[in-house]
Every structure is written in structure tokens, then in C-alpha cells.
Length: 336
Image (tube, rainbow, N blue to C red):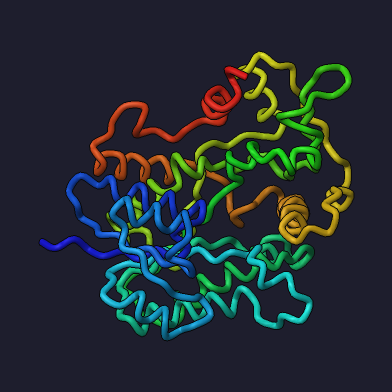
């Protein structure tokens, strides 16, 4: 049987590259992988090509180029970038929702059967209209649009939690008290942010280690996850923000603590668009009782999908389990 072709929109990004990497490790060679990029000559695109990925050029705003790029694909994984530079222009009237609809329509026109989208719960709906957040609301609407047109045999929405990898970005650490790079005056590594809300059950995802496997697991049985009400939670670990610093202290031996900013609106983000989304995330999560996904946070589904993908990749034991935040901190910071 010929391998099923899966085309990844955003193949050079953090999400897309994780999906590509996992699918390529499938031992049965069930899937062939194609990656879409705006610049096939870029370093990241060249790296994909060298790994055996078919790299094709297309632009998300150009439907015809996308139809050509999707043609022959059984499945598509798509992630739209809320922080794309195009949205920074004050004169830009197009939205992420507009982009998402073009991608969905192109996949439908190309005859794609399985459409997996990296979506979100609606912040507006989860917070009862109190705290709308464009990135969440637009991604939610894109997923609903894909389901509504009736063009696919299966539409699955998978939603990434808070990236473990965000803790590696030194430029944003000062916004959160310097954690985990710069200690306070008393030598303690302080993570400072608004509280999450509800049970403080923050969903964290190891993007490089787990997210691609979760999506891989979906592609193994897409019909199982295509319920109209299902949003697959991309979760590696669930921790309160207090527990985040506890995990860091256990993993590194470095004294750490969490300090809450009383009002989420007081989180200073210096007008940076991507961080305004983070600020809004705290707002709608507090207003919704911590319901980042619109429902209670759980990791059982992600664990099941991770295991199925790991088996397909010939892995077992610890490699078939989701990564914990403490394991991640130990790996990245334990020897430093």
C-alpha cells in the first residue's frame, strides 16, 4: 500500500517541525510528508529537504498556490501564526480568520480527506464575553469553519498548551521576574505573573518532544477524534505556577518561588503584540475559572495519543510517555 501523503502548512515552525519529525519516524512508512514554505531556499526549508521531506512553495494568502501544494494529499496539518509580521501593520485589514478560511478552502478544493488544525477554545465564549482575545477567538472560528463546510471525512482540532520551550527564551524572562535565568537580590529565581484562575491547572506542552507525537497519533485514527465537540488537548504536564517553580527547584537545586501579580491587566508587555495575547490569556483564564480549553484540563488523551505514535515509531518505555516539566528543567538547566 502506498503511503498516505500528509502536507504540513507551517512545516518550518515549532509546531510543524515537531509534526514532521514524528511522522517521519513511523516505522511502517505509513505516511509521506510534504512541507509548505514561503521560501524553499531558507536554511530551515533546506534542512527539511535534506531530511527527505518534499518541500513546496506556497503562500497562505494565495489560494491557488495552496491548492497546488495540497493536491494529492490525504491529510493536512495546519497551524496559522497569530504573530505573523503581516498583522503588525496598522493598515492591514485581513485577519487570521481570513487566512485560515483560505487554507481550509484550498485543502477542500484539493480533495484532502483529513484536516487537522492547531486551534483553540474561544476566549470570548470561555469567559462569558468578558475577555475576548483575537488569537484564541480566530483560531476557534477557523476550526469551526473547517467543520462546517462538510468537505472532509475528518476534521480534528488539536490545541497546544503553554510551551515548555518558552522558558528558554531569555528575552522574555525579565517580563516574568527573570525566571529561570536571573535570580533576585536574595538569590531566588522568581517567576512573577498573574495567577491562572480556577484550580490553577495550567496545561504545559513539550513542543519538540510531545506535540508532534500527539498529532501523529491523531493521524493514525482521525475518525476517532473528529467529534464535533472534541478539542484534543495538547498537554504534556499540568502544573500550578507555584508547582512550576517547585519543579525547577527540584530539578536544579536552585531556590525558586512564584509571586502573583494581583491584577492580570498589570502584566507589563510593552505593547508587544504577541505578549498582549499572553496577557489576554491570563485574563480570560481567570474569568473562565482556569478553563484554557473551555473545559477541564486533562492529559489522558495526550498520553494515549503519544503512546500510539511512539509504538508506531518503534519506541517504548520512557520514550512512549509524555515529558514532565521537572524532567525538562533537569535536562535543560540541571547542569548549569
